[in-house]
Length: 362
Image (cartoon, rainbow, N blue to C red; front, top):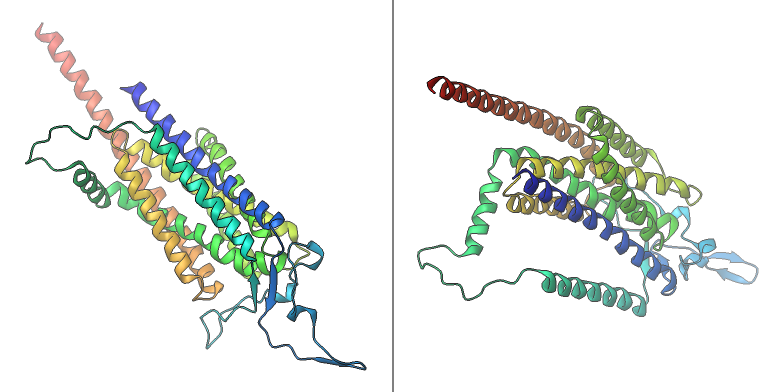
């Protein structure tokens, strides 16, 4: 039984590694297609007034077109206008620029990802175990799909999963903030549209490598210490995003923020997935379905709020949310582990007492 449990955990870790590495390949394909697929033009939506010269009125070149594919003519720092909270405004103002992607480029992107999606579907369908479609079933027995749905619903009210639910929501929301808001309000306006793929590639690579490192650190360092350091790092990154105005000369800062965010994300995901793998050893399918469902809810919330509210509100809400969810998750898991150790100790003690009683009777 122990070997089966260890094999199941190794399979989950391998699946999680491939799941994280898929982000690397996806962002790499996007970056290469945007870099070599054709010129992407950016147009300013601000009203530009003509400048009068001796030869007549002259309009700035920003109104005509600018190609972010050429680094020398990448979008200027003036395009990054971060919205801040004021007395009469909490909603995001309209964008001061808009990108134009040629038809051949976005058709190339769509066809590439559709092809990869169908390829993955074909591989999964081919390698999955064959289902027995003509197995006799008792009419009073529930269909397997209803049983699976019932397990997912019961997992939603499980005390151990309810303890982890706020943390998983935060994981999905902070990932959505980086994908939706960081790329829009920081990267694209300063470095151009093509730089989005490279910054997200840096974040994905650090998430993959950080998850491996975090798993090894948990064996030698206390969980409380690692979570405290991660909260401090994540809060510091949020303060940088709150105070910093992105400019094209600070290229390294974009990648440092993405890498640090990916490392924090790796710690959060490794903590939660390890907790799931150890708490639900034999029946882990439904809890992992709930895990990914909660993560998708956080992503959906971030994508929904991205075009509505200013970044200051999101940043100010994420910092206390990270601290509170980390504290709740840490205290809850420590309490659960202490109770489980006490139960195991009582079971072993009862077993020893029973064995001594049997020996005495003999």
